[in-house]
Length: 412
Ligand code: GLV
Ligand code: MN
Ligand code: MN
Image (cartoon, rainbow, N blue to C red; front, top):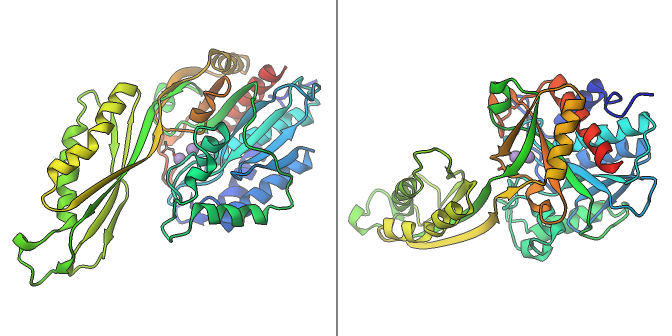
């Protein structure tokens, strides 16, 4: 009899990834599928149909995390959990997130087709709003599930159109009122998330599988500078309180603060909102985001804590407000899952490499709850958060075989 890894179908996995990529497709083979939108719901219904075809039990929790469960021989045993997210960046690719969900479903399908009975149940979760592209920050679903933040803490967050998170969530849950509900939180035996690497190391080193050892820390801030709008043709520069010019000063000072000769620290200003945003008015307000990352919690703390004073010292005459809306501490993964993934890779005769994750993932928030780890597969040129993101059908299937094997080991 074949085992679950042998029953993984590369063709089915690829076809399902391509079916999902059509939901929210954008030019250049990219995807824009924001969380809690009709497109998100369409993708989830497709997933639910596939899950039901193998008899998996579907449920949804108050954060709209979507759960697919395959029973084990011991109904009460703590489940082994896998999954990832289905939302994308606004200019995203076809694999970030959805791969981990569909790899989880493919593993369940392979277990089903190979007639494998596991002692523990196995669950696949699609976490809500991992990307933070519509509602910031990301990882809201996993943070609410793990108790890292109460779900209510996100209620007043607004998307760029002014829609409250609480309203989008309520609308979404009403559309899924036919699905059984489950509460937030539980205690899995272990969590293992499959994902594309989103960096260049596996490809560069010619390895098939990344055995992820942990995730660096991240902090997100929004800096708002408030000046005064004025006529661009008439107002002398000396009389202006120009929020754009002060933003330029602030970002220059922040670049100096964030200097790191070792090139480990990551500092990104990725979103700038200017008001009134016309050519011939001085801007009275600029809000810009900061994404700061480092593997060392002390560096992350010290540089992040210096942001407000650095901006205040750099601006000339605008008011400064700095708000922090995300703080994910660096985490180390658990040897139980690291070893299971490494053994699964060896059993599948694929090469592997231990490496940390530069991207954050929902797994970061599962770490305090149960032994956690991740599986990476290579992606072309390390490109991600970009329509050009690509991993081959063979690479994706190889990661899925390792996932199926690791899940079977952890659930045995
Ligand atoms: C995840 O999308 C990240 O920004 O690391
Ligand atoms: Mn992702
Ligand atoms: Mn992402």
